[in-house]
Length: 144
Image 1: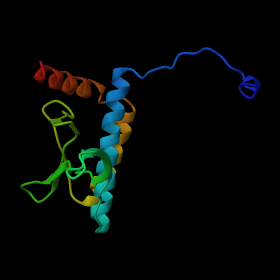
Image 2: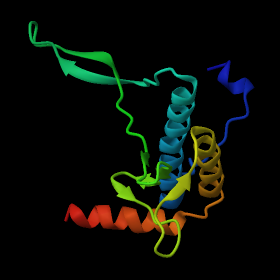
Image 3: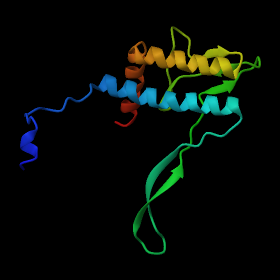
């Protein structure tokens, strides 16, 4: 304990993020994966993030952790006119980007990366908090 007494010890509470900030951070994390996926496609390589999961070994019956590839679905599709249509998703819900608008039309993968980074800035600034809140409430209602 003599080593710890050399530090300035105080009694403090850990501040937790508000639910709005937590939802925003969740969407920003997913958006970062979309940016990395778009960059990988533009460079002609594969993007395969990994996750750690716990499984039961069939032979021994013991639980062990293994690293597996995480599936990342892309948020964009090829439109009818040959252009890319980019949707912003919160879970399985497509977020509205304006009144009666839910997608962004893009010409190329380079535009896709720029658009994703612009969306990242908008979400970070809190511009989509109401849409995220509405999607979160709708998702919670489905479980009741």
